[in-house]
Length: 282
Image (tube, rainbow, N blue to C red; front, side, top):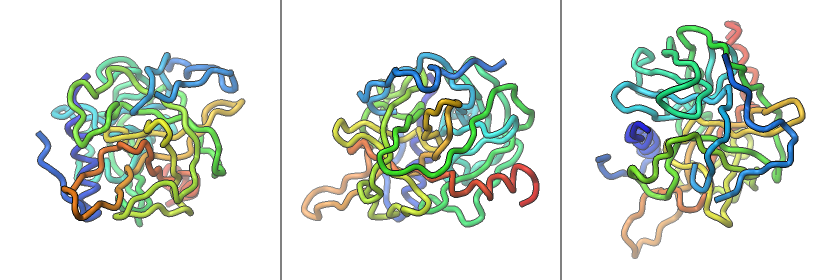
C-alpha cells in the first residue's frame, strides 16, 4: 500500500486550523454482504477487519506524490462527497480517485478530479464537507443518503486510515485492504473535542470506547453507513478525532485516536445543498 503521509498531514492540518500544534511529518462489483444478513464485523480503520468484497461506492482520494490521503463516497456517477479539510489547499488537477476497490493501487474505477465544491459555510470545525466532480462518470453503483439516525443506531465505518493509535502510524499501521468496523451512533456528549466541539444538530459521534476502536487519520472523508433491507445508506463523512483536555502538569499530547471515538459530519442534514450542487440548481 502507498504511504499515508499526506493523509496524516491533511488531518493534522485540520487540527492546526483549530489552534493545535503538530510535530513535523517525517463494471461495478456487488457490495459485501446482503443487506439485512446476520453477519457482523468484529470490533477489534483501528480495530477493523479486511472488507471481504469491494463496496461499489467507496472512494480513495490520492495524489501521485503521496498516494491515499482521504476517503469519500460516490453519490452519483460523477460526484463524490468527502470532508472539506481533505481538499482544502489542493488543486483538482492533482487529485486522483479510485472508486469501488478493496486496494488503493488496483481495481475499481480510476478517475481524476475535475473540480471541488466546498460547503460555503464549511470549515474543519463545522460543516466539514465538500463535493468532488469526476472528470468522467464511473459505472459503479452509488450510495444513497440516509435520514438522520437516533442514538444507538447501528452503523458501519470504512477506511484505509491508521489501524493503530498514534499521531503517525508507520508502515505497520497502514492497511493493504479496505477496513470495515461496526459501531453505533453515540450520545453527542460522548465525543469530546475542546478545540472544535461537536454540533449535535449537524454532526454525529461514533466509535467503540469500550474497545478503543474507531476512525483515525487517513479515514477522513470516509463513510458512516447504515445497513437496510434496500442496501447501504450514507449517514456521514469522517471529520475529526477527539481532542481531550490535557493535564498542564504533563507533557503536551497530540490527538492520536486512542479513545476510539470520532466526529462525523452528518450529511443527511445537508441533503438539500448536496442536491442543489449535483443538479446545478445551487
